[in-house]
Length: 303
Length: 255
Image (cartoon, chains in turn orange, cyan):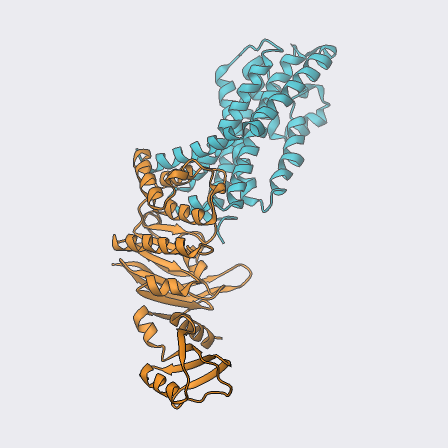
């Protein structure tokens, strides 16, 4: 059974803006799925429809086999949502925020307290349980929203930009936490602008642009589409432009050289060519994240 | 314990916590305002007015003033709480959860009723300093105050659903509710008005609520109880249906 099945989903807002133009999407149980797309592509609308915050125009959505039109209560019980913007009551304490949410899902107070302790501890918030939520730092607020979404132990966790504005150390600890959840069997759908995050966490990926799905495949298959990788080399200073046989090059300044390497070309050949021209390489790095390059290419194709 | 009961309890507790947390804004002002009414209209001016419907002016206005505080507090509690949930977007916590529409209504209205009745009790206790209150019919008194509080809580909820800014939740209380309450027979008996204005006053639903509540204390009313209760129940049913329809459809809540 799929964790999420979307068929022919469309959404036209009141002003006539067509946010979704008939998307089909399937996320298998246990998957860690990335939903990517530029701003305004339709990601948040899709998530809004799945989580009952946006009314769809046409189409069907099923969550673990429960149709949103016929089995809304059961479908809602399967989903945990971590929205993009902080939407908890800023005047309530951390504990009140998570306890209230558990109550809305019918979780008894005793069980809710156990879960609150478990998830707030795991997300390093238990010590802050009596603090007003508005007093928390940005990173703590993000973690609070994750804890809140887990209080009814959903089978499908949807995170809309969960690490936006979070420092790298905290981001990595959140990645570890999400990976553990996924290993425990929770299906995760993630939208993010940090493509490195999607590449390192997710097994499958959907790219949405202008309200249509432009890619829906495995991360591995998608990355294999990348046939050119660009490297930036820090070299000994050179005066004239460098021309290497079999490689496209650009001299950015007298000690920085950009080289395009096609799939199948060996880096040894590149270094041999560089040595022939008397160029010494001090260090090298990828110009951009591989997924980022692909993403930009796919999105630009649709423009 | 059923899931719906737990959800209702959570929402109701949250609502009661909200207004008790800010008691200086929610419970103290009506107590001060009503005490001033008792001193100025009841004691100072009232003594010169004499009797009204056979009772001292103070005895006559106390039920109306209690009801006035119940109405305004029930209304404003739900209007401001629900609108601020919309504004801060934490109403989404309820919309994503499997909480039935009637529970959402019952939770918010329950909060409004709790504040309305608590303020009503505070004002009643304060009034005892100025007048000896007798209760003519406890059943009529309790049913009328409870359903009036429910009615105005529902009104506040609908106002908040429709509101797009904080200004929108103050327009109805300032420009509709306050004039209707003042003209609803709090300070005078309708029998003092010329026939034409008595007829006009009967189009004001608050007249029925104040008269029924006053009957609970004094045993006299300008309007037969059966009319008053019919009007109150009719309005409750109509406003509940409207609120239910709006929330189910996601009116003002879902795009």
